[in-house]
Image (cartoon, rainbow, N blue to C red; front, side, top):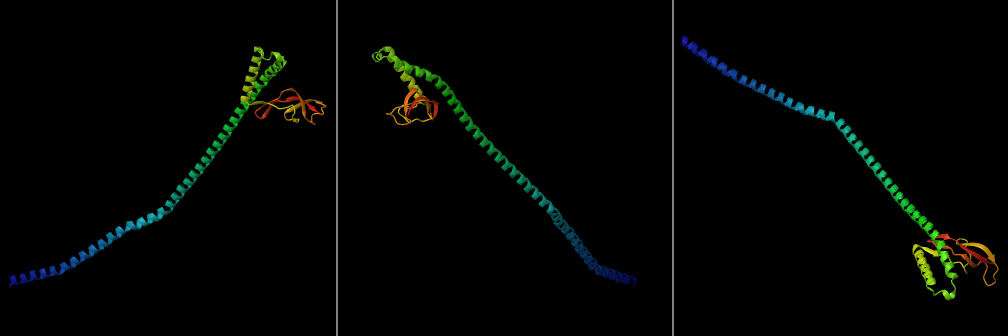
Length: 217
């Protein structure tokens, strides 16, 4: 009888154990769900934190954007300023080069005028010497040599741009003629050059020496 009671007690304990096992499993399941929910909340936490950081970094990004834009604007201003400076320097250099060329040309002209003015008295003496030679001696070697030298000298002056000013028979022009006397001459019209005492010359378009003349009437 005692063995039977012990067997029944063991059976009851086993049934109690079996009844408790589902409850424990259920509790474990609930715990697992709670842990899973907690882990999901933990995982969601960084996303929320990330959104917050993004929101926090938004003004910073805008500030950085404006700084970059401000640097770009300053750089564009510097480029425009340097470009304008280079253009001004190029214009100044062009003006300097033109002015230098003009000064060089003027210096050459002044130097040439000085030399030609010193040669003109020699030309005058050649002309006087040729006129003083009698007609019958024009074919002598001396006269022929003087004539050839005179022609060569005039050719050189012409190549340099020196030309004689026309005077006799021309209307008096104060821009190229220098009147030293007036004469009465019915054959000539009024204000006509009657005689030339000294030949005048022009160097290019400028008067090198005025013609010294007498004017009729």
